[in-house]
Length: 200
Length: 202
Image (cartoon, rainbow over the protein chains, first blue to last red):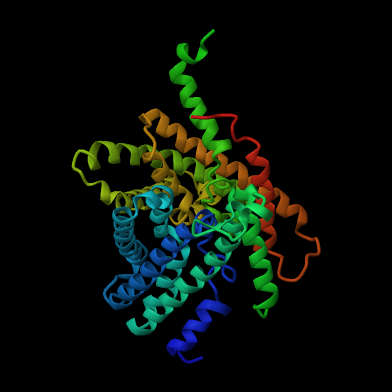
């Protein structure tokens, strides 16, 4: 398949989706999805980091000695994550208090390392940019889908706003916002996605 | 009749260990180290190898990171460098341990060595350090938090490994085998661990 932006995007988002296909980077997928607002912040941070670190790794790919490749990539990723962390802390301290440690953990998010190592270290910057974007968007799609189930079921809200007629029909399903709910939702999503979308 | 005051120091350290291992289990309540769990937990032996390596590395790195953060980064007002500092410390510590283990004991190297590189990218290690600096711990309490978190992770991956070994041959619906069913098992286990919550509050 040719490396056109379009192909890279569809591959990264659907058929080779990092979360349900390659099962990477799911720590944060589980932790931040109990509120949609947290999820959106996390997604923006991850997209920014994958894109920027992919481009940087790709630009430097001929200058990094093979032996120190991994640690260099980690340092590149860590610098971008630091930027994200500082920006979120400055703009929304409330959200940072909850997702702060998980933002730091974007460094060890295997999606980003994986894309830098598997794609960007062997390709030119422009395709790497699209590859990073596709990986980030694929990740965001799954996270937002999970958050859109967990927040309404657990709190009866979407983005902190009450669902219409919440007082009449809604009953708090606490388990959805607790850790087990996250595991069940991601398990079910992986199941559906693998049974329907992925041709083994 | 006030054991908390008499042996306050010891019991606080012990309580931190227990709460890190059970009520706030790093895998089941904080979701960290999932990638390695899904990848490695197919068998009990390999789960145990990785689990032991994680206990050792979380304890040691949370101690080192505690010292570096409180006595180096805070006095110099460089707290915003904590992410990059922690990850470099963890990566170099793991590398160092790998080299030492290879020299000292080949048996230990064969048992643990292959797991050590995996640990650098295991988010549980970095996560323990990040959660640790969020709490007003003393040095010993930080060590105990690191050890407790590592032990909780070890416990969880051993249990998951055992269950996965049992269901290995069972027929499953299309698409559920592998990560799908493992996530659901972990979910049920997390439900059981929710039962511990409220037993210890610190």
